[in-house]
Structures are given as C-alpha cells and as structure tokens.
Image (cartoon, rainbow, N blue to C red; front, side):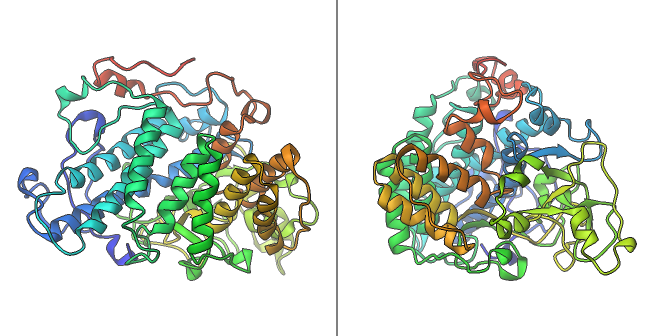
Length: 494
C-alpha cells in the first residue's frame, strides 16, 4: 500500500492471549475502537479493504527480523546504550538467550497477530461478492504465508491455525505442528495466491505476483527443494521485469524508493504514532534511528542509538576490489570524519553496549530522511524485504545445488558485474561456497545472514557460542507456553 495508507488502522479484535499484541493507539483512528462487532463485519467491500490494511500493518515488526538476523550472526553486535539496554538482543548476540526474552516474544506474538488478521479476512471470504475481492483474498493469503515463514524460520514447528480465530480456551487445545506441516501450508498459500496476483501491484508496497514467487522460491530453498526453487525463480526472472539498479549507493535512499530492484518492500512514513513502549505502533521505520550514531554532531548523518553495529570481521570480508558494496553497507565512522573538511568540528559518543567503529550504512538515520516527532523511533525509509539481487543469488544457489552451474554462474555474475567485480568461473561445491559468500557481502546489513548460516550448516563454525542442535532455532517464549496450558514442547536445549 502507498505511504498515505500507513496512517489507516482498523482495530480488529485479536482473540486468544497467545495471539494478541499489546494495546496501543494508532496515529489516526478511523472509527471508535471496537465499535464494530467483529462477527457482523465484512458486509461491504470497504470492510475487506480496511481489514487488509490491518493485516499489512503487522509488517512493521520486520525491524526485529532485520536486527536479529544480523546480531545473531557474525555480521554485527547488539550495541546500544548498555548491555542491559534491550537485553534480549545482547543475550542473542552472546548466544545465551533463553525462553524469557522480550525481543523473541515480540517476534512470536507480532507475527501471530499478523496471521490472525489474515485469517480473519479468509474466514469471512464468502460473506459477500464484489469486484476485486479475489485480489484482496490473495494478498491476505500471501501475508499469512509471510508471517508463518517468519515464525517457522525463527522457532521451527509452531501451532498452525488456518481460516479461523481461536478463543482463549481453544488455544490450549492446539498443539505445535511440525516444521514440515507449516512449510506445506506456506506453499499452499503462495501457490494459491500467485495465479491471482498481478505482476504490477495496485499500489506501492502491496503484494505482487513477483513478491509471491520470490517468497515461494525462498521457501523451497530453505527446505533444500532445489529443483522447485530454481524453476520458481526462473519464472520470476524471465517474466517479472525486474532489474538491478546501476548505482549500488542509491539502493536504500528514500528518494529512490520503488525502483526496479524492489521485489517486496515494507512502506513506512515519517510519522511516529507510537513510543518506546509500543514499537509495533510506529508508522515509521524504527531501525534507522536505532542504528544511528550516538550523540553525533556533523554532516550527512543524524544522531541515534548505536544498535546493530557491524563487526570488523564483516568489514574485512570485503576484498580490496569490493569497496563499492563495503562502503555502501558499512560506515567507518572515524574514516568518514577524517575525510571531511573540518573533522575537528564533528563528534560522537560511544555506547556502553559495545562499539566496533562501524555502523549499518544501509539503514541509518540521515539528514533529509528524518521523521517526527521522535526521530530516534521513526524513519520514512522503507525496508526492502526482497530485492532482485537477492533473487538472483537464491536462483544461482538453487541451480548450482541442482547441478546446473552454467545458469548459476550467469545469475551470480550479474550481481558481481553491477559493482565491477570479475566473473566467477568455478562450479560444484566451490561455486556453492562462493555464492554463499556473495550473499553475505551483497546483502550485508539486511537481516539475512543468521538464517543463511543456519540453513546452509555454517552457523557453528561462523558464530561464536553457537551450540549445534540447539541454536538453529530460537526458544518458544515461555509465557506463550504457559498461556497455552503448558501443552507445547520447548525447542531442544532450552
């Protein structure tokens, strides 16, 4: 949806404690909260449209996916004001996280809130008929698949609820499904949505056929279904009309949003709408302000909270001929200051939560991209969930693992050519490793690294403190197990 719709929120009742989110007041109320009886809703096309906006609204939680995907890996440290500031991220950084962790609980409940809002629409698919209903249902189906994908990649098998809402008592009767069952439902949803969705979304930020194909190809890749993944990505590459943006440095700028490389992004506005007590209420992107340079005074950037700080290991992983991507992804703060005309006039502070000298330069507070009223909490910069370079690299991996190195090389070398890197010429397992390395460098700071390491079996060797057989998954939040009547088994090792 376009940014003008980011201020529209429909207060839908999310029934069942385990599937609820904390109450908050959005920036703009369309109707008095809970004035509409949920069971008598969906009597007009506008009801379906408003409910769909409500289902999209939970995509705002993706800033947590970005943070954890980097901080849990070898790409970055938690940072922040102190080691007890957002302690859950520091525990994840050190691989000592357990089942009591605010950030992991938010991932669980916010994504289930998204599932519930999508289910609310799909449960009422047959109330009325109108032009455009099938497209709304297809978008809701995609959103359910997206939220379940986040849940299964974080937690493994989770309770699987489809096309219905649950009361508090019913929640205690729903067991965890297997990961395979969750993935099967995701595949069903995406394959149902793809034929209905158009290549061009009706508004920026809404789901297109390309977004659904990209997510389906990724879902197949996560399950090592390489032939299906390859053919799905080929359909997207051959028919989607996407292309790599020539200038890597402009990929993440607000002024350039909606460009040819965006396959699926989350729309944000520069309006706060929430607070530190309700980050999910924000209409803007929380990540850039949190990534900002603490107490910074100088040109180009704005001050922030110094979270999610890239490591020297990541910085040094870029070769000497890969400076375009390195400098676009990572801000070396001291080198930047020393390059300015008046470096003595620029200063910043170091947070007690750790300091590497580096900042996430893709999603960072910049002058000219600052929201209001509390610009540490919000930003108008969209989060690109899937971009075309990611698609090409996933397609390359799928083809390589499916013994088609010629096609794999063609895809990965498109990504390298964009930043003036020489073509790869290898094959087999050597090419596999090169593609994995290419993913780390191309997608640095975008939230994919931890999950790539886990799914490719490299996590134990790359992440300090990682325990094989345990840390591949995060623990189910203990409070959710308690609310479900202690009927869910915890993940191994927690």
